[in-house]
Length: 279
Ligand SMILES: C[S@@+](CC[C@H](N)C(=O)[O-])C[C@H]1O[C@@H](n2cnc3c(N)ncnc32)[C@H](O)[C@@H]1O
Image (cartoon, rainbow, N blue to C red; front, side, top):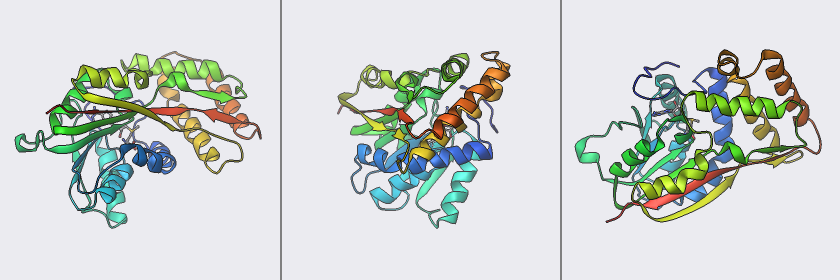
């Protein structure tokens, strides 16, 4: 990862080419369903915090309509540069302004504060030690009556079946690698209380299905995303002595076998919540 991490947490997945491939896959699988939940209106100004490779940020921008109404904030320089390259190669470099910055101290000018119609963050809060500080920054960026919308993981929701060999040990080690970084692998269930704690009103919640079963069009992609996310944390898990290498590799083999099973199913949903900034 190419960044100074002193002011906030480490991002467990990093920004290697393999990880960027996984993030793109995740976007392919989820973006249309997430867009529906976000329920954007034409002309809205949107701030996307932790914008990653920017695929969803550009989809947001295409949906609201006119150019430069959408700003993506990303802390990792490699992710941000790749987001700009992807936007260029799609002929969409004018669509979104990508800025480098930290969600804990959003790089917004004084006149920009309190002007966005929507502040959005997807799969960011699980990577920061104090998600309430990120929500507070998002609230400051939105106009009275505007919306803060967050989508995040809750690793307690996750159920592959039939259970892959070695999965429990691998999953527990993966979840504990979040604790080690000081972030919350179960933040999804806290989204409503985080929004309520920030003083937002008219809160609603929902979820986006992120599973599938053998024979479905998206199943291989969903399973590959899971395996890649786990495989990418091997060093963190081994260095943290959360699992030995043999058990780690056997857990990954178990998932590969599960992926080929004609009865395989993955039950998982990402958590979404929205609140309105009071007038
Ligand atoms: C799992 S990715 C999700 C990217 C994008 N939101 C999406 O859904 O495709 C999380 C992103 O948040 C970025 N990130 C992590 N901590 C951050 C922070 N404190 N401020 C800004 N970005 C951060 C990471 O570099 C990474 O690109």
